[in-house]
Image (cartoon, rainbow, N blue to C red):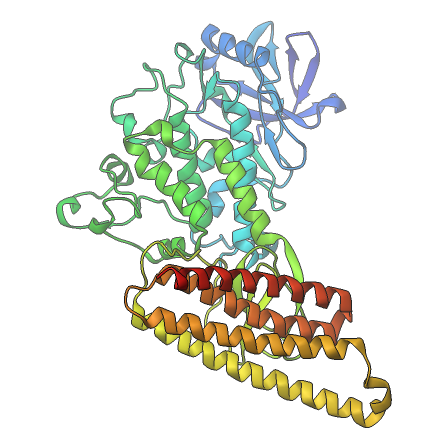
Length: 525
């Protein structure tokens, strides 16, 4: 026998006789009819919560919905859609169902995925697999968009935001649920309190703010959101660690938050970190900075915590940089590889295992050895502090040796190719236009190498401008390798003489500019 309720407008809804889930204030029922509501469900409150205050709160939410409840492909805000009645008495409300095949986000906020989940979850979110970090960051973006749409009304603060109130499906779609417990205000004055907050997701200001009595600012949610994102990425709470020294008495997450013990914060010297935190160092610097702003620096400046909109934009851009690909040829076996277009990475050719360095989608260098460990992200290198001179000398020596070996190898290859061609088509090859261009490129490469030696000699002198010379060396080394790469690509791939000529002119123009500034600086000393 079905359960019958009616909407405020009098539409009859037939519900299944047993709820499909329940919570602290009520139970959720699937709809049998009408078919037009098959993507909705009904929440019926326990009798003690069927109050006038609850009715007025839900009525306000219906009249002041976020501008975009869903985009149908990435997120769903399961917002109050209509009130429901039984025997003319208010009993609950109608709301959208979460996306099909959804589970609680909490299932992905642990170090290991539970064995009872389908294989799809492992394939997309197992942290031992390469796709995991990308898929987890996409989840964070979708959550950020949904939360931003709620905050953008300037009326709502979730207060009790946590992974248990967010549902996800294998495709990465997210559904925000349990929204009838949020705080409602006009920006400064309370209209309806939020009442409940979970200590593990409550910021330090929770020591003086009681959600049942006080106004909770939107910056409160920013703290909770950062914790959720950290758990999604690493499977561990950002305040879980073993406290030592003056904090050795701290044993709970709640107390760790109150004592500002973010694992990568200003008090990290008093913490011994579990291994899952170590992967924090592999993140792009922007993401690390956002966590520090939200979970460490935000203690004294809650308003400085990144907003949901800030997180969404930053993560979207990082994903774009990480996921947009371009094809490059392995310089040894000619295997085509798809690599990040805007990143500096080192990869192994899957065919011949050559160690290849890629900068912004172009071949930068290679050696015939495997990389011991492949990192998903490569941190940006700072040149603000003057590097250790012995270390730089060591690196430059290695770079020169590798460059010289590479140069000899390419010259030998070029000689072999030229000899073979001469044996077969000597007469036709004598006057090809590319011969003179390639010879010119080879000659210019020797000039570049002489200029590189000048930079090294200048760097060794006392009171040299180390940072500028290191940059000059870097650009010159890239131009030397770039000439080799351009010729190789021309001979083995596109056969576009105009492209080769244009690239050569650009590299020569850049190198001439570097030398002009260098010579001017020398003449003024």
